[in-house]
Image 1 (cartoon, rainbow, N blue to C red):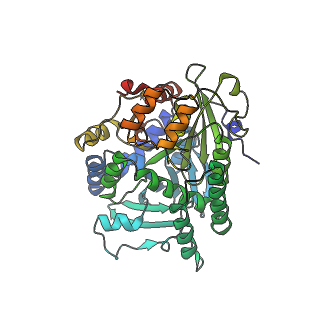
Image 2: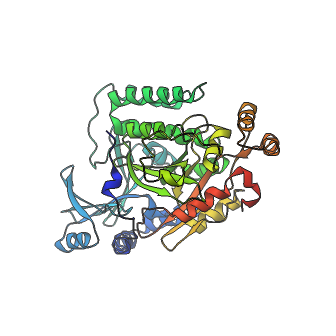
Image 3: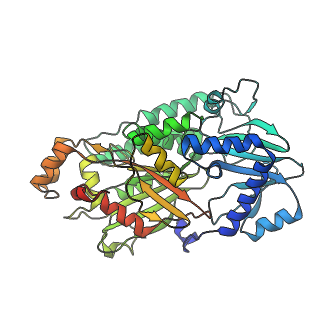
Length: 457
C-alpha cells in the first residue's frame, strides 16, 4: 500500500533561520580552529561554485547540557543510532549533529566515492577507510588539525554512522545489480512493457540488497544516463570530480511523465522506497501538476511533473490512471517528442546545491549559459542552464502531427532544429528551506515549452 507522506506534511515547508544560525555557528567554530579547513572551503568555492555547508553530512561536537537545549530549541530532535546521540532537524535540510563525551569536533562531508576523493587529493593508502569496498557505508578521516577532525562519508542507503562488516558475496551482488540498472533497456514498442521491465529489475535487486541500497544504485544509474545527454552536467561533474566529490550535492531528480503512465512512474518510485510528499497544482492556465516524493534514508528526492486539468487536483492523480486529453501541455509534449523520462528520454533535469552567483559565473566562463532565474527569494534561488537541443525521431514527429498535437510548421521546426531536452538546475537553499516555489516552477515550465522557443531567456 502506498504511504501517504502528504498526510504527515500537510503544512507548507517554512524557512528555519534559527536552526541555520546554530549550524553556521558550529561550522564557524570548526573553521576557526582549522586553517586547513578554511583552505578547503575556499578551494571548494573556487573550483566548483559550491558551499561547504551544502556538503556537510554531520557534525560531531562535545556534549553539554546547553548544546542539547539549543538543538531542541531550534527544532532538532534526538534519537539513538549506532550507540550515539544523534540529533536531526525534520523541518529543514540540515546536517545531523552528534553529541559525544570527547572534546574533539568533527565535520563530515558526503561524497559519492571515498576512493575518488582520496585519489583526487593524492592521499595515499595510509588514510584508513572504515568500511569494505562497495559497503553501504564507508568513512575516512582526511585530516585532524587542532581539535577538529575532517571526515568524508560515502553512503549507499545507510543512514547510520558506524560502518558494519558486510557478508561475503555482497560486493558481487551489488555489482551485478549496478550493471543491470546501467544497462537497463529503455526502448520498447509499448512503454508499459518498459515500466514492467524496470519493475522486474527493481524487485530483483530489492530481494537481494534491500530497498535502500537498490534505490541508491538505481538513481546513480539515472544520473549517469542523464549526464551523457547534457553538456552542462558533464562540465560541472568534471569540475566536482577534480576534487573527488561526484554528485554528492544533488538536491532532487526531476521526471516528466505522460498522463497515461504517471501512475506507473509513481509505482516504480514507491518500489524504490520513495513516499509521497507535497503536491503542486499551478492552476487552470498553467495546466500542470507535480508530486514530490522522498526516500527518507537515501537523500533521494523526486519532483515528478505531469499535465493536469483543474478538476483532477482533488483526486489521487499520483495513483489513479489519468484519462487521455486532446491537448498537450509542456510536459506532455516533451514526453511525446522525447519519450518518458523514466524510459527513453532520461531525467529532465538534476538540481544540485551551489553558491548561486559563483556557479553561474563559473559555468559561463566554461561556456555554459544559464536562463533567467525563476526563483530569487532570500531563502531559495533557482535557474536552469540553457537547455540541450535534442534531435527528435521522425516517427515521434509524425505521430504528434497525425494526432494533432503539433502543427506542420512546428513539426518542421523540430525536425530541423530539434527540441528542448534537458537541463542542469542551479539551486541555492538557505535557512534550511526544503520546499519549492510553485509560481517559479510554473513560469519555467512555460518557458521551456518548445512551441514557445522565443521566450527562453
